[in-house]
Image 1 (tube, one colour):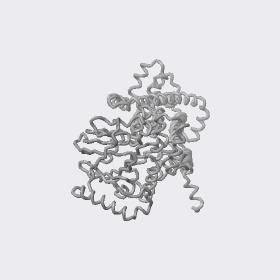
Image 2 (cartoon, chains in turn cyan, yellow; image 1 turned 90 degrees about the vertical axis):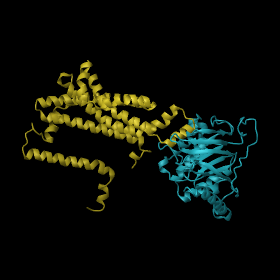
Image 3 (cartoon, one colour; image 1 turned 60 degrees about the vertical axis):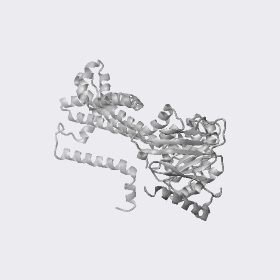
Image 4 (spheres, one colour; image 1 turned 30 degrees about the vertical axis):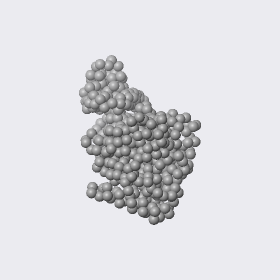
Length: 280
Length: 267
């Protein structure tokens, strides 16, 4: 069941010498990444992971397994203590050229309370210096995509938790990213809202050229959403298993109760229990 | 009490405006009654009516004095806001700067202005300027402390978002730190507006009759010497009303800028 196979991307001239050959088809590549905090805590131990273009990968694991730390490294918000991360074969996520931009959705909606929803969604474009005439259509399109087009002129506090999260996702989509990093975005929501957002997110991913890395501690969420699940273990954080999820491309509500779905969940559940049974 | 009457009385606006006014009217009437009933001499406690008459008869003089005090208050308040905010911006730029400068800001705050005022008055040939400096010293600390607190109280998630989008230091300041700081800044303004008035009055007291003094503090001193207690009360009333007006003005400013989003101004 343990598939530690990392499929090397097509060898392109951009590949960095001395590393695995990764190129434009590999939005993310973590090579022997480690993180040790100054107090000696080891959050991540020798993580090697490649994420290919168009994948929906969930990082699944108990709290303390370093999955959020790994995602922060993928966002360039944290530096590894050893090893390195490559974005489309390059050593920094900077300069979003055609087909190579990333956006992130955080655990909380992190909207600016003083700005209306549409201004919040426009923020990444504003910061990049995009004139309002050009950014507004993108903002409107992103809001329509998450179903918030009627709420563009309200303040975040007037929205429910689920709608705030939608606004947060719209903000990430407004930049038309190719790589979307999501850090337990629906963890604070009730189950109905979460299921709805999960299925909307799945559709969104299926409808465009988007690679998603999704952090979660819910087995069901991981199986429902992903094309591949990376199971992580704690103390120190490491990759335990790397599993392809078989399932239809179109996943509706009925899929949640289908035998295939339940079988995949059970398989992951056994793996997680094996890996963490002695610790938890 | 009839059920239809109760909701009207408990309406928030009524509760906030009418009830304190009502209480004031009751207290004033009691005061007036007590003065008349026990024939309290006017040089001890003047009745509200006596004070009202003095306000009218000494009006031009008192208003002139009020204008003088107001000028000092406004100048020192404006200076405190300007210098205090700039100082706060400098403090948040680096921990080293804050660590080296903040103790001196505290030193300014804990030294009583009454103790420093004579020096400043000696050093400044212009009395008005000396008074403004004294009042500024009193008012500046809450502005610095609150603005620093506000500029530092930034949601770490939003800061990460700005970093992720490669925001410049300038963009972070303008679009994140300053809006985040507004609630604390306005709290600072509220305290500082009252302190500027207190500073102006206290400094004028220290400058005393020797100054070019024509402010309300000078009027209070003079009235005290002459046992003109109604005028003393009238001047006191004007100072108190000025303080309330300043506070309300600051509250209004805070409300206008925060009402759309900050918890403190909702409802």
